[in-house]
Image 1 (cartoon, one colour):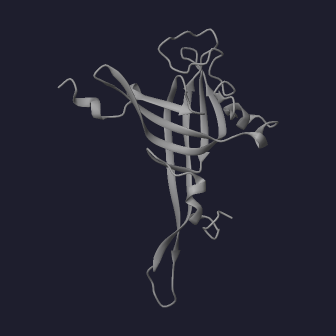
Image 2 (tube, rainbow, N blue to C red):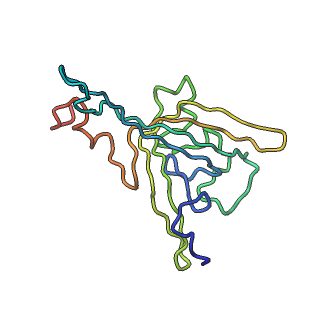
Length: 186
């Protein structure tokens, strides 16, 4: 009975990654995939002939419990010694999440993949597998909550290009969904 819940993904066995690095103290992750449709109607027929897809959008939110450079926790992988503010969540070759919120750096900022991984202890070895990936994310909103008896929590909203379980195709691979000839992506 003790091993009954091991097949579920919980906050205790999940890792959230952005810019290929684990985000320390990330919580409350959500995503929404929306396929907008329009009804196709014909003259002389009261019911809709078909509902055709016209747009695919991905958005969501996540929260990060903030820590400063004084925090020490040897159990966290990829923990940043400086803290976990938006400029500290970064990859040197790609920039940082803070670039999405800085008017001087917005145009040069790079998108990131938001990945949800499952951690599992299997016979004494730590295994990790991607469960869900939102590709090409861009931060659209940042807020903060802090109360007298709590800790500071940054709340972020984001949009992405594509999302899906485990392996997500990139925007370049979707070629046929764009208004192109589908041969060379132009």
